[in-house]
Image (cartoon, rainbow, N blue to C red):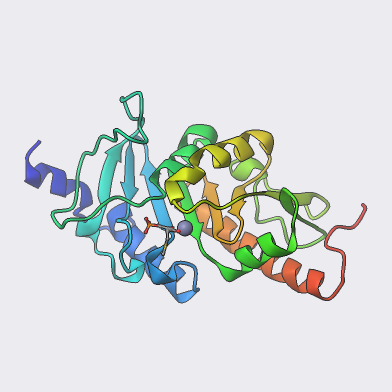
Length: 235
Ligand SMILES: CSCCC(=O)C(=O)COP(=O)(O)O
Ligand SMILES: [Zn+2]
């Protein structure tokens, strides 16, 4: 494939093209304090193509030409170490370190998008819930889907989000995130203690709104816990 043909994967006047959306959405996440200091971000899969941002860059300043495009699924037997690319940026950039974690969401939940934030609400939830999961009921949990891709939850359901321990390198979270997704098939996200959260959805709109709903629930859950109010009621 020529360089011009590869660049065509990230060149569009359509504002909803993933190469245009990722920079715009990362700008919004930056202003929410979710992706400051370069970490975190969003990836989008449309059919057999995955669009991923570069690693370790100011996420609010990404341009469409910085986006990596990968085929999905990967034909290699080791897609996490031996990745195949359809398009790489001309600048000397590396794909997000979150790529294997985003891949968990594609492979295990058929997700169309996955978001990683370093939101302080999510981090505080992992500090105040010392067990394996955060939980809350009788709050506005209708915006969260069962498993992240199923039917919406009900006000009467108890939302549980598994918490996994952090590691010094993002990639090393891959196996424990996959194990948490297997153990909690109804979870729409995985929290990483003292680090942040991964949230997925059928498409970028659902991943984004679920991340917003979950962040609201972590914020109110943290406030309730600190005020001594139980976060789970018996129905
Ligand atoms: C200062 S961020 C440390 C690594 C991290 O948590 C992260 O999310 C990295 O994401 P990136 O897309 O920049 O590789
Ligand atoms: Zn991170």
